[in-house]
Length: 166
Image (cartoon, rainbow, N blue to C red; front, side, top):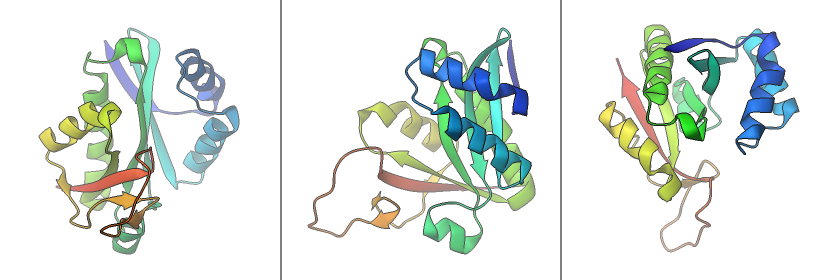
C-alpha cells in the first residue's frame, strides 16, 4: 500500500505537478535542483507512493544548512511533505523510518528542524515520539540563535532543532 523509493530524473515533472496541484509550492527548478543534488550525492530524496499514486517526499541533506549540524557532521532531514488528503495514513511515518535507517546506518546520528507554530504541531509530536531530542541550543531564526528579549517573526524560519542517535 505504501512504497518508498529514491527519486529518479523521471520524477521531476510528476513531483512538481502533484505538489502544486495540492498547493505545496515547489518551483520546478527547485525539484530539478534536488534531483541534481541527488546525482552529486549531497542530497537523498525519498518519494512515497500510496496505492501507486505519489503521496509525498522528504530529503536527507548530507551537509545541513544549520551551522551546529554542519560543524558536527550531522546530516539533516529536510523539506518533509505529505499530500494533505493522504495524511494520517502512515505515509509520513514510513518515510521517516526509511530516511532514519539510511542516515543512522551511514552516520549514526540524524538531525531535523521543526517550525514552532500550529501547522507544525503534528510534526513536533511525531519527532518526539520517534525519539528525537532538542539539540539544546534553543530557538533559531534563519538557523541563528534567537537572542533573549529580541523580537522575531513566527514563520517557517523560526525553528527548534532536534537530533536522534542510533
